[in-house]
Image 1 (cartoon, rainbow, N blue to C red):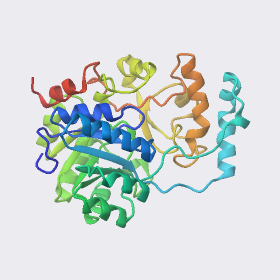
Image 2: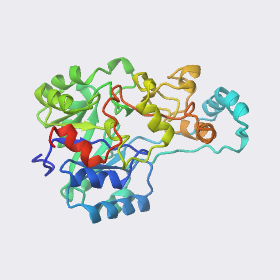
Image 3: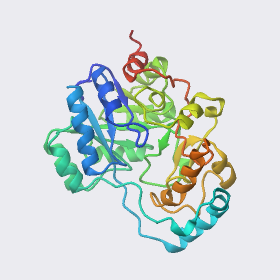
Amino acid sequence: MKLFGTELPIVQAPMAGSQAGNMAAAVSAAGALGSLPCALLSVDGMRKELELIRGRTHGPVNVNFFCHTPPAADEAREAAWRTALAPYYRELGIDAAKIPAGPGRAPFSAEFANALEAFKPEVVSFHFGLPARDLVGRVKAWGAKVLSSATTVDEARWLEAQGVDAIICQGLEAGGHRGMFLTDDLTTQVGTFALLPQVVKAVRVPVIAAGGIADSKGVAAALALGASAVQVGTAFLCCDEATITPIHRAALLGEGARHTALTNLFTGRPSRGIVNRLMRELGPISPAAPAFPLATSGIGPIRAAGEAKGSGDFSPLWSGQNATGCRGVPAAEQVRSLAGVS
């Protein structure tokens, strides 16, 4: 709370594609740290969302970016991916030849830094490690605190050595993309309450627990294990300010939300979501999926066609392993509930 200038030890997880500035502003105004995900935004889009946030709250805000290295095009792998998806193209009447290949998410860059500096956000966070050292230096130069996600003790130690101000300890239960960056071996991933005390012991900077925390009891448990704060995502997905589809909302509130898995089908990188038809039929992890984020283009038309029919069979229904906290309430009310205050 001292580090971020918040009233509560709660960080709203940045959830690209599922929320925008409205949620970040509401959470920050409620005394927690609201987050703006920028992985799917253009520079102009980011600027507009930050203007909205600054117009609605004086509370601190976290601006989040992916910092992956864009992969080189791989025609053979792209062809194999389109072949794997061909039965769905035929079923849904999609002309695969008209689907362009291309990235779906942009990493942090000098262009983003140039636009961001005018707003001087209190916190800037990264997923998949850190960007180039000079970009991190620019962020720190205007006084922002820098965070990044660690999914192993080794990643936490690496981040501390690079000078981050706090570490987000992301357990296996967390929804959305794994923040892993030193390895792609999924067997290294462990649960939040197993990883948290190990990371707390290994580093000196504050540690923020993330993954499977859905209510005030989970918050209290994380703090008892040494976390300085918690980051919560899934419990905010059904809030009024969320931008998810009705299909996604229904899935989170349904019985199927108890069955999630890590999958690379939707983006090319492991990410946790509710198991659906595509994940069952292709297997949640497919070697045919192009490297992140190139898998997105091939899946996009299938997802759109399915959703047009009212189906989430081909959609990324992001969710952590514990969706019990999902409620259709204002984000500010959810913040108070997580903090255990009325």
